[in-house]
Image 1 (cartoon, rainbow, N blue to C red):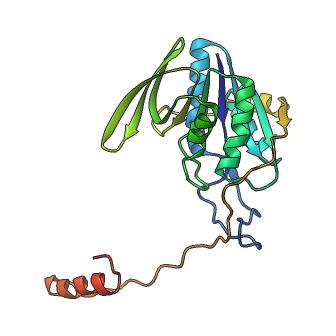
Image 2: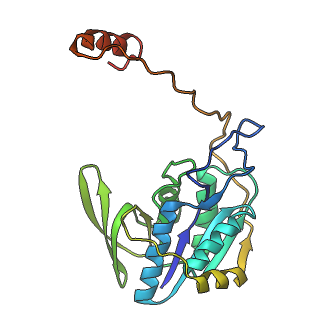
Image 3: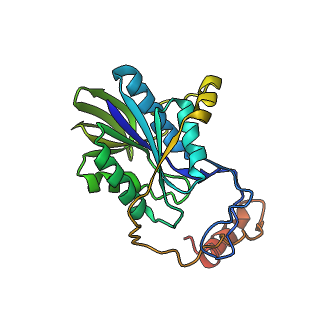
Amino acid sequence: MKIIVCINHVPDSTTKVKVGGDGKTIDKAGVNFVINPYDEFAVEECLRLKEKNGGEVIGVSVGGEANKETLRKALAMGVDRAVLLKDDGVRDSYAVAQALSDFIREAAPDAVFFGKQSIDYDDTAVGSMVAEMLGYPSVSVAVKIGISGNNAVVEREIEGGHEKVTLKLPAVFTAQKGLNEPRYPSLKGIMAAKSKPVEEKTPAPARNKTEILAMRKPAAKGAGKIVGTDATAMAELVRLLHEEAKVI
């Protein structure tokens, strides 16, 4: 069984993000980058499928040289091969999906995994776009996946409950938190990952559909206001919510 897991290189969620000098990107100085947390669930599910069915897990990422660090973390977890689709330019979600789908089409895997979303731009779009570009069926927000032969039964989160979906492979899955508990890399895995090569490929030029015109941090929160300490303040509170906050 050949499985591809797509991995993103994102700022740590604890990082204090600063806008770069160009006003369109973040300032990467001092920023700690990590494997996208949702992608860890995808990696773990791929490794479990390989342990059950045999085969190979290939990790792939789109980006610059720094993405190799994140790919090595996936190798340390147990991924067999790592491929960097190297591009130092700016790619929107469509252009990332374009590069990934070109690689996946050539590799012809049985299954493709993503995290349900990436914590940088948080748009949850790339996995579904790759499936559409490839003509593969897809299931998003998966919390349970069973694969037997050429068939998959997937439980996914929907508003207010879960939905069970059956489909044929090859297919695309996006992993939700709760699908599994990602393993910690072993010392042996970490040492082995240091010596494993990360293959480099050059994707087709980006065909971005969107452009970032400006990036800015949200305005600082205003000071709080105490309007009273008992029920007599209710009328004033309602007035402020209506006239100042404009939430009612």
